[in-house]
Length: 250
Image (cartoon, rainbow, N blue to C red; front, side, top):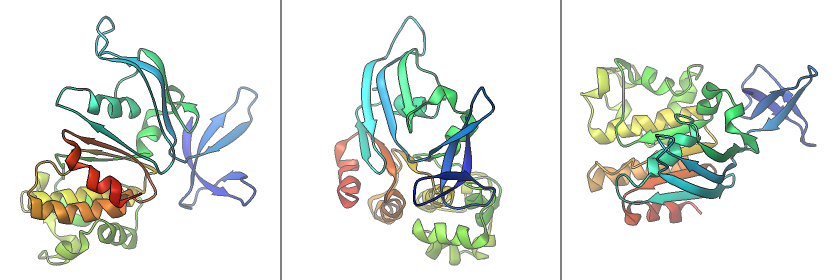
């Protein structure tokens, strides 16, 4: 099963298209040669899921949960509690031993991994930039993004202001991992990268846990805009790190 650009009519009819429409669908090939389509909405559900890194040692047992499109789910707990493991299972970095994970009603094992991950945006605590321009680093979120879409994503992420103050603006060259930038600026580029991909599901994995309070406020405003209308999974060690973001985005 693959992810395709889609046009969705008022009556709900889905048509595959090569042009970017802002809508996507899961493409189902059937044994009789016919095709059907399911709209990508961002509905993620776990059904009696159990997982262990070794088959004889389960670390997650009989987990059932749901995240409806646009809903926000928080995982809070100490390091090693399994928070990131759950989101890694959504990405299919690992496969579950028992139970099912369904995405828009589809067993994720039936979705091509590259397409599954393309539909998910991830902002991590550690930001990884590569040697290239600011523009190229943001475009990594979606390789066919136009310059206008890149700049719109940067504005959404609250990154446009500092980018334009760099020596060459969006064409400023960065070295690996952005050593020329502050940690907060790197994080804003990571948010802009996720914004340009425009995913329906977003995973924030302790995205602000290692930056100072002043910078966190700037980064949080960027994340607030990115979170709006998306299915959201937030990972944090302590509840106070995530409650403000959840309540600002009902």
